[in-house]
Image 1 (cartoon, rainbow, N blue to C red):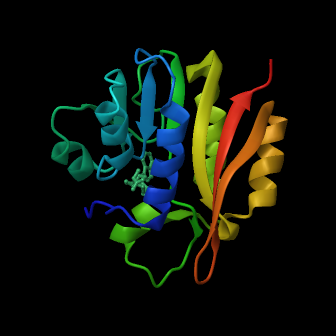
Image 2: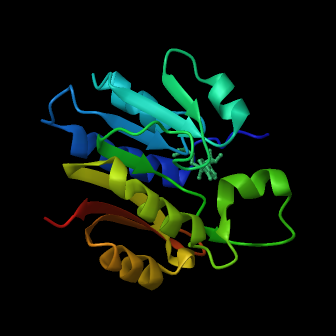
Length: 181
Ligand SMILES: C[S@@+](CC[C@H](N)C(=O)[O-])C[C@H]1O[C@@H](n2cnc3c(N)ncnc32)[C@H](O)[C@@H]1O
């Protein structure tokens, strides 16, 4: 299966990740969900955050990552019960386009509406978050942001927009998401 190569979305999230990690204790526990090429997990490790785990559904992405703790998993299905301080996710965030090959849909397609996998992720993340944990999540203007934000609020999360980037046919957003105390 093809491994997603870093693109504008990856770099936008990476930039916010580096800012976020500044002044954080190096011991924090981090999960990079949908790691792909491993860009976000490698960024954490390079900044000295060694307690980083990378997960992806794609076995080829997992095989390709050396020297990083990895788990092949459909979202949290194979992630052992534990608490993270930071979960990063650059998910598949586009609505289904049937003309796209199945192979690359795994990297791009969130579901028919463009948000399904994101809502599942937000729901499944809950028991994996430490009390003061943060999620860094990227999505697009094509992912139906209103629905994502509404669902996140229903799940008792608070959201802060960290970054926005306009591309040719969409806008990308990075949000910081936390559980309300
Ligand atoms: C847009 S790519 C992002 C890759 C990388 N994190 C980056 O920032 O460049 C989405 C990634 O999510 C993975 N993915 C798709 N569905 C998944 C699922 N159900 N569980 C875990 N990972 C999934 C894909 O294999 C792909 O590597």
